[in-house]
Length: 139
Length: 383
Image 1: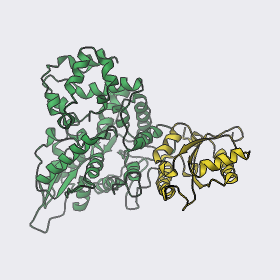
Image 2 (image 1 turned 135 degrees about the vertical axis):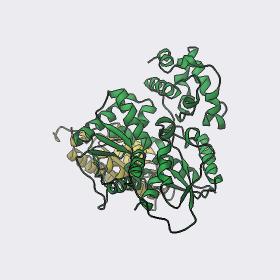
Image 3 (image 1 turned 90 degrees about the horizontal axis):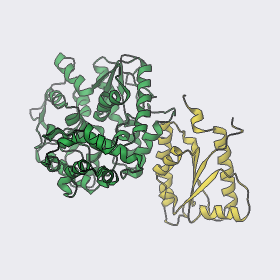
Image 4 (image 1 turned 60 degrees about the vertical axis):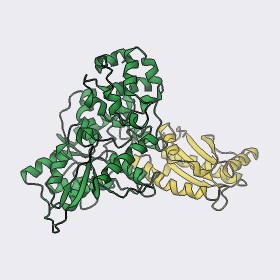
C-alpha cells in the first residue's frame, strides 16, 4: 500500500526566510517531491493551531511548518512563539488520534535552499511511511 | 425544511407580536437592533430567504429565555436551529471564535481516528471498559489543551479536573463508570450551528460506543451533553435503549438516600456562594432544584441567589463557539457583577462551558469573585 500512497502535505513557510529558501531551492533546480503545497505566511508565528487542524481535516496527511532560525526572526521572536504553540498543537493532534509525528517544525533560512529540499524530501518519505491518516482507523 | 415548514413545525404562526421574546433576549438588551421578534415576523411574511442570509441568525445564544416566556408557546429554539440548518446548506455559518479550532476538533472527531483521550485518568480513579454505567466525558480532554496552560487560549483552566471529580464522586457512590477512549464530542455544537450531517455522524459513533460497553445508563456532567443525548439523539436517530442521567439528578437522589455525605463544618462562619444556572441545565432540561438540594446538604455553605435565577437566569454569553462578540463580554460582565452583588465569595457553575466563558470575562477585569465548579466543592466536602 505504502508504495502507491502519495501523501498530501501542507507546508506553511514564513515570508522572510523559509519561503525565500524554498524559492532558492526552485531557482537552483533542486529536486524535491511534489507532494507539498506551500502556503506563505508572514511569520511562522502566524500559524495558529487551528490552521494545522484545518489542514488535517481537509485531507492533509502531514503538516510542515518552516520558519527563520531562532534569533533571525524578522519580527524578533515569532518563530519562538510558533515553537511554543506547536508544542500544544502536537498534544492536540495526538489526542485526536492523528499522531504527533505528522506535524513537523523546521528552521530554514533564505540561503538554505538545499536544506529546504532535504527537509521536504525527508518529511514526505516519513509521511509516506506512516500511510494515510485513516489507514490507522479503527474501521 | 423550508421556512414555511419551519414556521409550522415551531408554531411560529401563533406569534402575537407581543415582543416578550425581544424584551427577554439578553442580546437585544445590549444590542437593541437584534430582534428575535423581527426574525419570526420575517419568516411569517415569507422572507425566509432573508433570514438564512442574515448574520443575526448566528447572534442568538439559544439560551431559551424567549421560548420559556413566549405566551403563544412558539418554539423559538427550534426555529433558530432549523433556520441554521437551512442556512448552512447554503454555505452560511457563524463567525467562529478561537479561529474555529473547537469546531475543527469536533469535525475531526467524526472521522474514524483512534483517539488518545483518556490520559486524564489518574491512578486513584476506578473506571471500567464495560459495565452498567457509562460516564460521558464530552469535550473536556480537548478543553484542557485549548484553555489550559500553554493552550491556544490559555485562561489558566484545567477542565479535565471536572472529569476526575465526576469519577471520584461516582466511585464514592460505589459506581465504577465506563470511560471509553472511543467516545466523541456529543455533537451539540455542530447541531446548533446547523451541521446536521456532522451531528449525525458523531451521534451514531457515540451510540455504537455506548452499546459496545453494554451500559444501559449514561451519566453526563456537561448539561449540553445531557440534553443532546437525552433529547436530540432520540429525536434524530430514533428511540434508544439507554437511560440518560445528569450527575446532579443522580447526586440529589443519593443525598436523599443518605449515600452522599459531607464532612461537618468546624467553623461557625458559613461560606457564601451563589449559583449560575446554565441555560441547558435550567431552561432546557428544567433541572433547577437538584444542584440547590446538593448545596443545601453541604454544611458550612450558604447559598444566596442572584436576582435572576432559575428560569430567569442570564446566559453565560456565548454558545457553540460562534459569534463571541462585545455583546457576549457585556452579558458575561453583567452576570459576574450580579454574582458579586449578592455578597457571595464564590460563584458556582454547573457547566464546563459556563466556567470557561465566565473565567474568560473575568480575566483582565477587576472582578474578584471566585469561579468554581460545583463538582470541585462536592469533592472538597465529601465525607
